[in-house]
Amino acid sequence: MQSPPGITSRILDLIKIALLVAIVSYLIATFPKKNWDALIQQDKNWFLLGQAFIIILIAHLFTFWRWQILVQSLGVTFTLIEAIRLGFLGTLLNLVSVGSVGGDVFKAIEAARKADKKRAEVVASVLVDRALGLLGLFIVAGIGLSIATTLSPTLRWIFLGAILCSGVGLSVLLLIVLFGHRVPILWINHIPFAGHTLHRVAHACMVFQGRPRLVVELLGSSLMVHCCFTIACSLISNSLYAQTPSLAEHFMTIPPAMAAATLPLTPGGVGVQEMAIDNLFRELPNLPEAFSGLVVASVFRALLLCVALIGAVYYFTGIGKK
Image 1 (cartoon, one colour):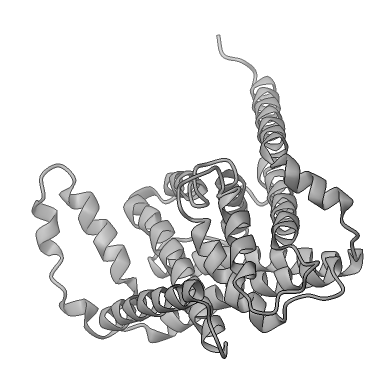
Image 2 (image 1 turned 90 degrees about the horizontal axis):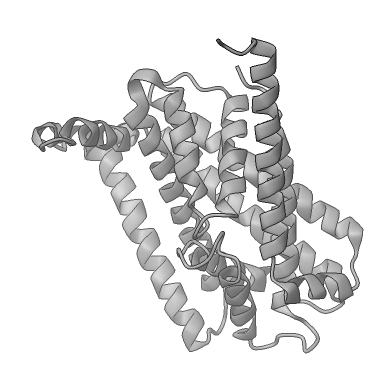
C-alpha cells in the first residue's frame, strides 16, 4: 500500500530539515575554538564586515553564473536559478568534505541526474569549472606578487609556482582554442569498459575550441571571484585593526593561501587556510605589530559559513526547483 503523496512530501521535507540541522551543527562544532575566541574578543566595524559579506556572496554568485555558462555551452539546458541551487549545495558540502572541493562531487552527481543524455559532459563541466577557478587563483596570486618590490624566499617560490601554473594553464587553453578540433579523441572510445564515458568527458573538455570569447568570459569571471575574496579580506582587516597591510599586500597573501585550502587535508580546508593566511602575512616586511592574520582568516571563515548557511536554506527549501 502506497503512502499518500502529501505524507511522502512531508516526510521528505522533514528529512531535508534534519539534514540541514545536522550539517549546521557539524560546521559549528568543528569550527576551531581558538578562532571562535578570536572572533568574540576582537573589536569590529560591523559596517565594513557587512560590505565584506556582500562581496563574498557576490563572488559565489559569479562562480554559479560561470558554471551555468559552461554547462549551457555543452548544449545542456540549465537555468541560472538551478545553477545557484546546485552551486550552494556544493558550497555547503565543501565545508564538510575533505579539502575545499569535495562538495563538487555531490554537485556533479545532482546536476548529472538532470542532464539525461549528457551526464558525462555535465560531470566534466564541474571539473573544468574547478580547473578554471584554480587557474584564476594562480593568475591573481602571480599578479599580486609581481607588484612587490621585495619578496621573502617563501613568497618568491610561491610567485614562481603561480607563474608556472598560470603559464601552463593559459597555454593549454590557447592550444584548445586554436587546435582543439585537430586533437584525435575518437580512439578513447575503444578503451575497454569506460571508453564511451571517457570520450564524452574529453569532448566536454574541448568546449573551448574556436571559442575565445567563452574563454575570456569564464576566465574573467574566475579572476573577478578571487579579486572579490581578496578585497573582502582587506575589508575584514580594516574592520578589525587601525593599522593593516595594504590592499596590494592582501593580494600577495590571500590568493596563495586559498590555493593551499584546496589540498585534501582537512574538512573544507579548515585550519589549512587559516594557517596559510597567517603564515603568509608574517612574510610581509612591514606587518603591523598588533595585526593577526589568524583573526582575519577566522572572520573570513565565519563569513563563508554564513554564506553557506544561506545557501543551505535556499537549496533545502527548494527555491527555483522544477
